[in-house]
Length: 430
Image (cartoon, rainbow, N blue to C red; front, top):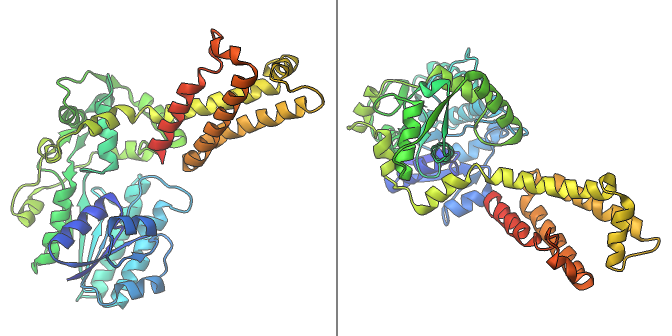
């Protein structure tokens, strides 16, 4: 079959695409990142489209002749023009209308457990709006087969939630919001991909909606304990975190990180995330993987354990580097006596009318570098610039005032670990 997969460079879309290709289907991967498509699907025909922005005419030439369309696109956090409404509701509506116009006979849409147009969660509300639209579309076109998959928390290699929960399980003490009794039913991404493959292959009229969940519910605390076992930890100290503290954590997470730690995700966690595994079991012909066996399918490597331990440290490392640059620039601009700063410049031979403008220019440059480091999208370019400045400052001082190498406070020696820390941030955030 010719199957168009929307969001094929994403975690879920990528696994589904690879499974369908392995089953012998002619897949057309679609995503908005042309470079990512080329990396993940070398030598294969692909299409570049942005679900949140593409209009119906953009989709027609991609969809004509397809036997099925699988939409896997979703976002947890809004960024720029990528709003929940645009990506979850308006974009899919345009896609599905174009699919009907192109006479595509089957639509498979990856939604979410709890999707409801009346939900207090913006994620679930917009997912629910897409489901209502699909119901209306299917009613108007009796020959159209529509299946809405409603997964619980999806985990597996390459998943953002897998990285986050592994990092939480690697902490010396794990904080459990409201005691960690929230109920979840995580499903392995391979089971989700297998469900799509089975739906494509079977002519049976499956229900319009299908819960894609693990075999049984598990508490949030139990889930983190499973991740700890996967990482090789025998015991994880756990501490209950009151709800108001979690509210503060999510407030900070929304403003200072890009992790899926938001008030909306906390709202969904409190509401629970479970469903009926029986229909999925019938579709697959066997029960879905439980969390321990699903994680064990890809045993944790040294790289996985290292990533889990470093995950919570990289952003503080970048922020502290930014603080150092900003603070040093402000110190030179007046927090430290300007006369004393000019005396330091004099030790390297910079005196006269150009000394003060040079001091102010370099100080302003330091502040700028620090502020730019706060934006992870530019961290590689800005990191390279900061390393260049460090090397330049070090070379000048080493030639003009080599005694600073022996200063007990290490004003030059500290540049060596600072360069290493900057390289680490660049490597992680790239």
